[in-house]
Image 1 (cartoon, helix red, strand yellow):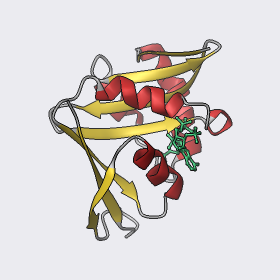
Image 2 (cartoon, protein in one colour):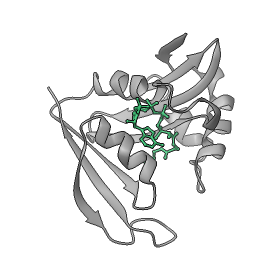
Image 3 (cartoon, helix red, strand yellow):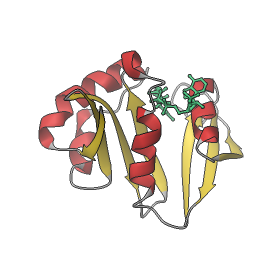
Image 4 (tube, protein in one colour):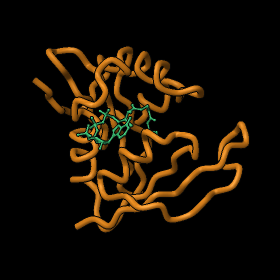
Length: 136
Ligand SMILES: CC(C)(COP(=O)(O)OP(=O)(O)OC[C@H]1O[C@@H](n2cnc3c(N)ncnc32)[C@H](O)[C@@H]1OP(=O)(O)O)[C@@H](O)C(=O)NCCC(=O)NCCS
């Protein structure tokens, strides 16, 4: 059964592993430690942490989301997004790599729309798409 709950210190090693399996340029662990106690949730499947999501309500920003590659397409990403979006108001934005077609489909499925192209947004020169969703 999928369980969504707030992230604690003990979850960080699992999150770092998921992060390294999910991104070419993973966030350093300090980013995760800084969001503990904030809008930071993990998804558990049979007591194993298999995904996380972070939202920043002040900046209206989806900071990051990832699900372990072995546990994708099970609805965990959607459940995590719903948990963090509940704590955000008015609107939410995010940046996604142009090449990340799976994530773009995922966000569109959640009601996000493509708003703007951010040229050479990433360190390796790739463009980002700014996506937007109206909330409340
Ligand atoms: C994006 C990500 C978090 C989605 O997590 P997930 O748990 O697999 O997503 P869900 O199972 O909740 O998917 C919900 C819906 O989104 C869409 N979707 C998700 N992944 C998709 C894919 N690979 N291709 C097409 N549609 C997809 C589908 O409509 C899906 O519903 P369905 O499975 O009933 O068809 C996951 O693919 C991931 O961790 N990717 C690597 C990290 C990443 O790119 N994060 C975003 C950075 S901006």
